[in-house]
Amino acid sequence: AEEKEDDDDEEEEPEEVVDDADAIGRERARACDAQFGQSLTAQEVAALSERRPAAEYASTSIEHVTESGPPVDWARLDGEERRLGVRFDEATSSQRVFLRALSTFKDVVQSDVDYQRRPQLLRAALAHVLDHVTRSRRVMLRHDRSRTKEEAPSSPVKGASRSAPLVPPKPTETYKHLDDVDEEDTRRDQGPTRCRALVLVATRKAALEVCTTLKALAHSSKHTGRLEQELGVDEDDPAMQREGPPDWEAVFKGNTDDVCEVGISVRVDRSNITVDFFAGTRSKSDLIIATPLALRLAAEEEGRQGVLDRLSSVEVLLMDQADVLLYQNWETVERCIRAVSGVPSSVEADVQRVRLPFLDAHGSACRQHIVLSSFNDARLRALVDRPLPGQLRNRSGCIRLTGPPPSKGSLARAVSSHIIHTFRGIRCAAPASSMDARVNAFKDKVLPSLLRRRGASINGARTLIYCGSYPEFLACRAALREQGADFVSIHEYSRDSEVSRGRSRFFHGRAPLLLYSGRAHFYQRYRIRGASNYVFVSPPDHAHFYSELLSFARDDEATGAAPTALCLYTRFDALALARVLGD
Image 1 (cartoon, rainbow, N blue to C red):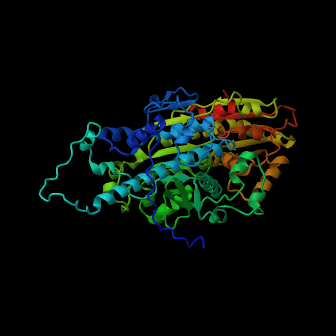
Image 2 (image 1 turned 90 degrees about the vertical axis):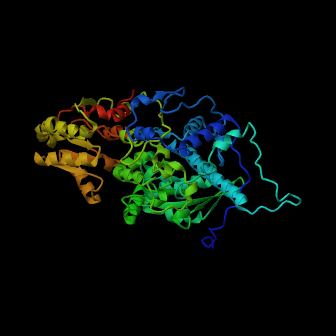
Image 3 (image 1 turned 60 degrees about the vertical axis):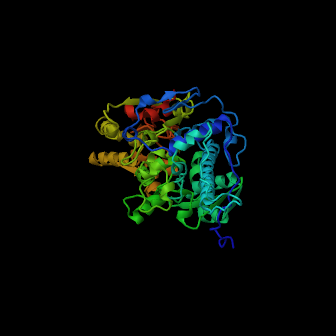
């Protein structure tokens, strides 16, 4: 019966809703107008198509916050949540800083969102997204009402002279400037299609958490019964029985299917907001929650060179758990971003009401990126600072929010205090050659010494070789095979039987070397025992992987020597290295 509800009912025209008269409301209104209401000049287009210079970023009055573009007033943060038109309880200090950053419509990258902080910051981000969608809907309805009144036939006034000329009144001083404004431009309130916001998630589990949060922010909701059915799993499902560290369970304890798309329509009625999950058709969606793989498959199905019509009007793009997306396939994420804000094959809206940047094919310059990640990464910085081909940077700038650097990195959290740690820098000229430089150093300098000690492995000395990425894993495996080394390997695509056999051979000393993929550790968190020596071909992205692996280190049974750990790095690995070493 719930499915048979009529979803095509027209929205009631809400009462005139005026933004808060305080400075926060006025500041947001100015930011919104500057972001969406003005065309880009040729000079702006040329500048926004280039990489943002690092010199544009400047420190702010808020600690651990840097910004580019027009400066933000960080002085008044109390009551920041009250400007939102959604249900939002009293915000924390970190939420208020985050909300103030979001209200500028600049790109916002928050890189200290661990599994404990994610719920509150995700709630703030979704509150901003839902608030933007509902305000935009109210503006459209207000303009619809004004146009209806103008097009309605005027009734004659009794006693009025038929021959009297119609002379418009002179404008007052207050509204004189309105004579110079094109009336049609003031009503450009939408893009070519309906959808205004896109939320990228990694799994169906994350999509369920996003939908649950949106349900709590709205005043009412429809078709919520399908959420658990489509996105959740039963309590007795094997996926719910697996156990692991808290950060692993926060990502993988649930439905980990990475193909998912949920369309949500938003209905405004006076001061109430209703969200309708699983809207009847994609063209009716105001907000779409999807995984990158689902959008990639949809773009390939439509066959329009990767452009999705329904995403051509996206004004806010929220990337939840960006650190998890980095471990899936970042190329797929980039292809999804290229599919957003493209030129659609057809326009659903009234062209006279489409915003000028979208008509000029500059919609990507108006799009706000919101990135939530547990760590900082060069690829996430490039997402907002270096536009993809055919795209533009955000015209308003960018804000980076990071937590204080840890006083003690993962190195200090290693269980055994007598492990000998060595960090070896490798010369490298460009980021693109960073992996090759580390692999060559491993092949030319590290591997020969490991093979010379191979005979001692019978008495207990064994070495675990950690590779951060799959291409790095393949290159190291090729080097080991080229040298005829006796080794076992575990990667994310290994079968359970292969993993069990490899771990057993390594633990009992029948294989002196274990080549281990960082992606396998991310997805499975295997407890690898028996190693006395560790070689990290690159610093792990997740700093706690370093201490987790070393927690099972053992002394050399033959010589009694202390365990050793060698980590290779280039200057382009500074972000990951800082998380391991601390400040």
